[in-house]
Length: 196
Image 1 (cartoon, one colour):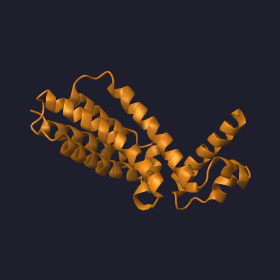
Image 2 (cartoon, helix red, strand yellow; image 1 turned 60 degrees about the horizontal axis):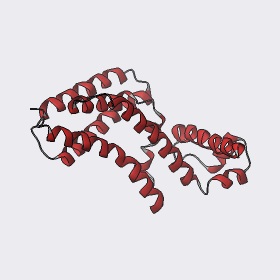
Image 3 (cartoon, rainbow, N blue to C red; image 1 turned 90 degrees about the vertical axis):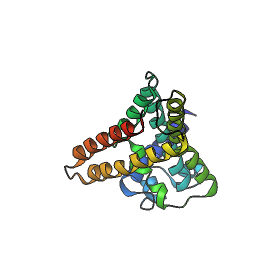
Image 4 (cartoon, rainbow, N blue to C red; image 1 turned 120 degrees about the vertical axis):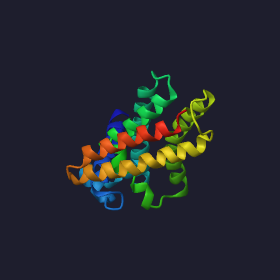
């Protein structure tokens, strides 16, 4: 059984590297088979399709992100500081594998079951942030009282800023540090704007 788990993990590790460097559409099952160095039958023994491999790679990587978020937020009691920490963490983790492959979900179509898995995966952030906004509203800390709207605005803003940072990261254009600083300042400005 250990050998089967090792093979499965090797498939996932190789696939993560390929998806991160070549994209989902640019990676074929033959690429994965070649990278792992096993037979086609061995890959299909563990996974039905490239899509299934991608979804597993993404959900595993996303779980690592959520574990990091939870560990970083667990010792903070102030909701505003939790939001600040989340935002800074989001921007500062540009090199995490999940961020190199998650954009693939925006422009590739997945089967209904796999799309549902991906949607549930991505809603984990929304749930964490909405819970923090609800906590801040309950404590009377905010000038706005709609946690759902605040969550959408905050996460959408972070994603937009993150896009600038990740493009600089990928292009190695020397602008990443500058974009990170701007993003950190924007996080502070947003939180100051909504805080009483």
